[in-house]
Image (cartoon, rainbow, N blue to C red):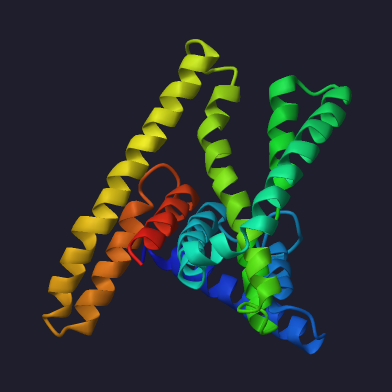
Length: 253
């Protein structure tokens, strides 16, 4: 019976999400809003039942892995290149303009420079690709030129997020060694991980999946696919690994 709390948390989370989604649909609002409100209701900052935040956080990380992988299935490198004249300058200008401005404002409020810089880098890329993708799909705008431009913009923001996630440890006061040495080591580790995964994704994994397809077992193929998805997520962080796996899916197309 040790697994009972996990089952209870999953059940309560699904009930809250279902109720929130139904209420949102009744009010003609996006179901994503209902899901968020459902999470708030069972969260630690509202009265009543409080779910196990550690378990729910782990479930959320797992959900992010599959959601970001789903984004990669709906968007290819060809789509990104088609909207490059909008997405590239837009995402870069957004970062270049907002990051210094927010950093300056936060530092004037008495925050340390590393903390202000971290917030300044986070604000320009705070848009949720998953939420926007879900809304575009619900409204039937995903395959339009406007929808592809929006997703392309968000894709570049996510790729910038990868670099920021790699560089975050260098902003810590506990970072050992010179800053540039720490940055170089972090980038080297990320590049090595990405290289190994890209090589495996273009050579090894497709060959294994092709062999599995010859067995005629659909269940075995699905299990192998889930193993690849979750196994890759055991790298740096699930969200970072899913983004890199997303880039790998572009190369194997």
